[in-house]
Image (cartoon, helix red, strand yellow):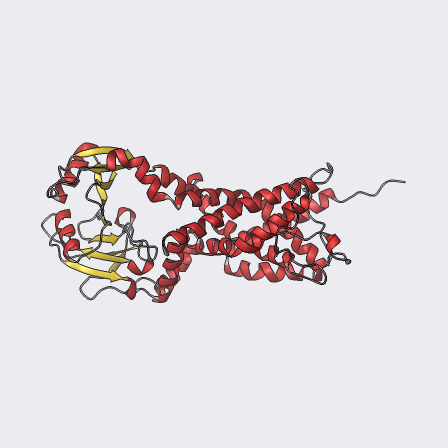
Length: 451
């Protein structure tokens, strides 16, 4: 959202108004490049199923025929063909699709193997980090290193600041009425881009706010701490089933794949058994329990842990994870949505909706519109800055002038302080931005002319 032209009012902007405008400018300057990347990759990831189908079709397509081979033969084919160990198996929901497996090689790298479920023949092997996985890592900034995931929380917090300050600037005051329709029609003039910027923020701001808030569970600091607090308070993952041993924190490949954000760090231990675990027993149990396909079977690295069989659902209420003893086929746990604490239910709902699957196609379209809106806001904001950029003045970025006094910044403080308390990394970045603002102000302060 953007500030209306001063011509719309007979009074000069107040100190609060100028302070909010200044921080709206800085917030956009700092995070819009990241938001544009995340919006682009997020918009692409909404079409993950279609992209994966197009990329992997030559290896994933099989001829549906007869009775499938034993799942143990699937694992053996992948192991022999790659020289690695299978860590999880995705059982497809279509009879004309290959079984997809994640394989860990001796050098600790990973591959994706496709096996014909009927002949147990290896159809192909591809990189573990494929196209959509790369898109996902770019979206979470993990592609640039694990430390960059910290930026996710900072960017999300500043995105909320952007929306809150934009709404303050748009809000009708005195005779200046917040724009609700595109009145300016000449793209060569700044008022057109100002109105487009304001309208996009006004009508799509709620979607962008939702995306920012529901993206927080993926941040390594805030998301991890919330998950820990929820579990300790009994509001997250369910308690251990009476038929199972104690829940244990999963490590590395023990982490159940596809079990959902609230359960992905949990596993169930089993009694030590002499017989080796068998995937066929686990899948037979999943089929007997009528677990809908597709589902992913996570194979534990240790024989004293259960297999986790997680439904690959698109709605939070369809979440279900089975824990099966791979040596006997005994069901150790059957965790369903109804057993989640309210905290896990809320966060899982936010994640499914964020990914555009909770409410079907309309959900995906709305999230896509939010991603497009981020780009419209960024481009229109850049054009506005370009049209009002100052003459060359050293380090000046053309930010709105800073008002004097703490009172003039009351509106800004009222917006940012609650967010900084909720998102600590955003607060730390705000302190850094304040220090930078003071430094720039000193460097560009006009010097008195010597007499």
